[in-house]
Amino acid sequence: MGFVDEVKFFVKAGDGGNGCVSFRREKYVPRGGPNGGDGGRGGSVYLEADRGKISLLDFRYRSHFKAERGSHGQGRDRHGRSGRDRVIRVPLGSVVKDAETGEILADLTEHGQRFLAARGGRGGLGNSRFASSTNRAPRKATPGTPGEERWLRIELKLLADVGLIGLPNAGKSTLLSRLSAANPKVADYPFTTLVPQLGVLQLPYRDPCIIADIPGLIEGAHQGAGLGHRFLRHVERTSILLHVVDASSQESQPLDDYLVLERELRAYREELSDRTRVIALNKIDLVGPERLAEVMKMFADLNIRLLPVSAKTGEGVDLLKETLAELMDRSEEER
Ligand SMILES: Nc1nc2c(ncn2[C@@H]2O[C@H](COP(=O)(O)OP(=O)(O)OP(=O)(O)O)[C@@H](O)[C@H]2O)c(=O)[nH]1
Ligand SMILES: [Mg+2]
Image (tube, rainbow, N blue to C red):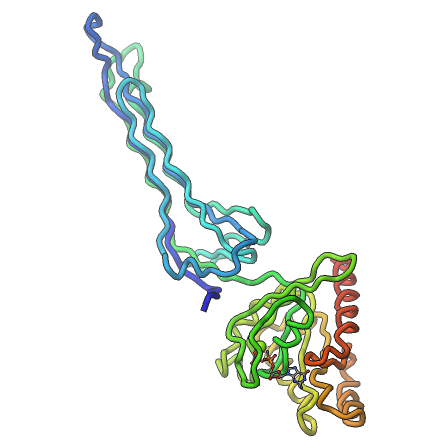
């Protein structure tokens, strides 16, 4: 499938190496002093956000990650080598939790941002550290401390500016391919899109706008109907929700579809109800001008930006792009 957005895995940092007990042995020095070196530090395990990663797929093949242990100290005051750190690359938007308590430990949203997942153990001290005027030949050294270990969870919440939502077949993926260079699968059956897709909308004189297309939602999604509502997680952080409604369906269906979607959004997260919204009234190429006027009237009371488009022919798409650009500017000002 290529897209994994929830994983559980185990991290174990390297143990510290032990300190060493050793004494000098030289021909003409009868009682050589202590020369046991310290143990090396154990390697740590880090998670690092990487914009090149789009999913947590790597974790499907591997659930245990270990950093190298520190080497033990040796005679002649040789300290043990430190263990190498282990860096696990994760996608931007990775929310790291303690798998046992559910506590959020980190939210990795910027490229290069790191989280220390398990700290390496400290190296033990060699016996040369314990020499004193009263004890010139200490037989004491300390062991290294164990590296930290724990179970973690990552829940990926994609970072996008605009979230495309709608019933199956509304034309979300077709619209994404119009707005961006993305080439998602499009077909005339429901649930064509099974996992979220990202596209980049290039706007003149502005930062590119990232659009997330998620699988279609149906009534009862919050109770598990269809593919359920878990993919809504990926629009949680978007500043704009772009509703795609099929304008070509009969009677009051376009408005009913919209209302179903809104109910599902609310059932998922109440906070989503005050997110900026735009409605793309799609498939207008299938609708005559009179019916279009009728459908638009149904939405009039909602007081939400309504844009008639055809994702298929491209009609209205430029105006939609401009509207998104304007709303993006506004949401940046508000921030
Ligand atoms: N006539 C017409 N057909 C459209 C338009 N937009 C999409 N379609 C068709 O509608 C069907 C569904 O389109 P998709 O883009 O796959 O719909 P979706 O909302 O992504 O569907 P799911 O991924 O299943 O949720 C396809 O057969 C498209 O060709 C449009 O503007 N006009
Ligand atoms: Mg789709």
